[in-house]
Length: 420
Image 1: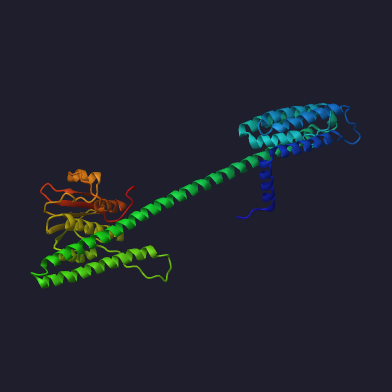
Image 2: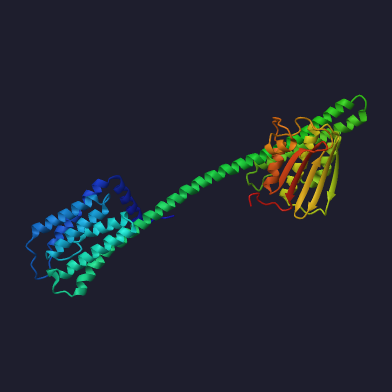
């Protein structure tokens, strides 16, 4: 954005005026006093000036001294200047812009500092008084009434228009500055919210990857150690599955960390696709190698899921099965998908008794549903609920009356903002 040299000089003058107001006022008053005295000496060709020089100088001096209070009392300064100016014109002095200089300055400062209603009332009153004084003055008897009135009207309208433009410009600059400050505050707040949301998303993703694979690896290693002497072939198969589990964990960690390292460079390594329900057979196989038998059932016609819903559904099932493997004293779990209307219902349950720490987080909703007040430290159910709500779904978890634990979630087939 470029600024003209005139505007830059005007801004510098305004800045200096704000820093040294008294010095500026004194200089202006002296200049206006000189203009007024010079104007009192002007006459029309062939006319003699009135023999009242001292009275005119005194009135003009009072008019200029009143302008020293224009910053705090603009209305009073205008009234005093206008009264003195009208008196000087009524005494027979020739009405010129130099003679009206103090009144014009007072009108300008009134338009800048006062509100619009005060500017209209005091400005119109001053215009009428000066025009009436010019109409009855003896110094311009040979001029028509139109010429007597149009000149003062034009001269006094100029400072009013200039002052109004200055006031509007200051208001515009103040509004622009206020909007810029508000935008800056909003930008910083939005940036903080985005950082917080991104941290929570990364934490959920890392928790799902690490907790699931490490829980399966721990279960597989424990099973292999238990069967090492009695069933070497089965132990070998479990250890092979353990290698696959750790490899899968490393791949997902690499993909997650690779996403964090992306800087928009087109030459950077491509990212792996996000996991979805297509990887359920791999998940079921990994759970089976850890000693957990998973049964999958589907109700309704399967539909195409958006990437966000697909990832959310997979992560919820993954975390729910991880909790079953970690906490439930059972070797079987049931996963049910139901496509109803515009929503996908997912239920993960087990039939065995649930340990005291079956509920991962201490969440009021989960505690009420489970009927317990344990002080757990995990974030599994809380992370599942956050994932569901992030795409407009809902999730509840708790003990079943017939025993076991159940996680139920309803996800929209097309994600949307939960607040909308």
